[in-house]
Amino acid sequence: MSHSHTIKHNKPGSRQVHHNREKFNPYRHKDENDKIHISVLETMTSLCCKRCCDIIQWKVDFGKYQHLERPRRCNGCSEKTVAISYHHICQECAKKAIVCAKCQKPPKFEGMAADGAKRPQEEASDSESSDDEDEDEVGAEPKKPLSESLLKYVFVDEPISDEEFAAYRGLDARRLVQYKRKVQAMIEKEKRSNLRERERRTVLRKLKKAEGADAGAEVMDFDSDEEM
Ligand SMILES: [Zn+2]
Ligand SMILES: [Zn+2]
Image (cartoon, rainbow, N blue to C red; front, side, top):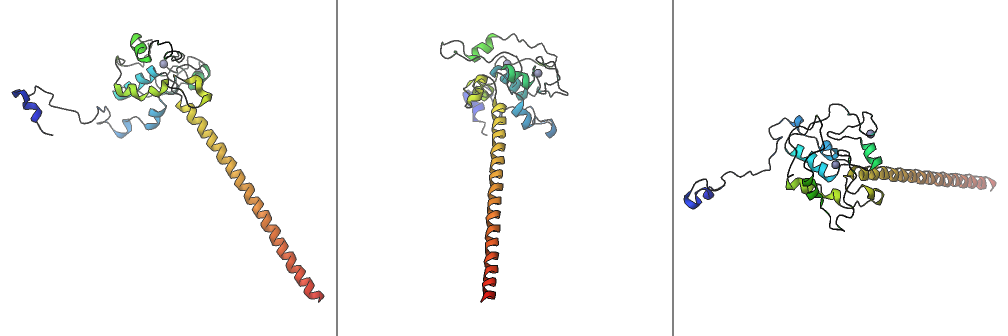
């Protein structure tokens, strides 16, 4: 990189000298094992509203994400079923009640665009006084989440392609959709292999029949030879 910027206006340092070439990465100097695993990143916001998705992502972006050592008690079913950090109710309860697994509010987006009501971002800044008084809520919460994070979870407020989960619009329902697809794929596979098995058996049966017919023909030929 050239240093031409620094001597512009004849004042060294009048412009920012150092530019980060890469985005700030709190895990750069950490051990490989301390990095947050992709499987965690994929599930940490499951059934959370966009605001809570942003909050959890912010913790990751600034190296504040803490793993759960053991499952926590769910505010819904009172069982120790909360397996995801910062979540207050378990996935089953969030799914049943159709509420955010973290703030436990029903997803808000309906009619928002239609009647020109508040957009989710404005709303998020309105309720800055956090309702989380948890012992594990370490560090200040994002007043302004990074634009990247804001973009990352925009899909949460968008309609869900799978109609079965339409009611979950406003929550990160990726896992529900993925799970359904997985189950469907398994059923399809099972069907295909059953079909293949049936086909195999049919072919075998035909083959046996044909063999039997051949054998019969041979026998018949033999018989006819004898008769002659
Ligand atoms: Zn529960
Ligand atoms: Zn929430």
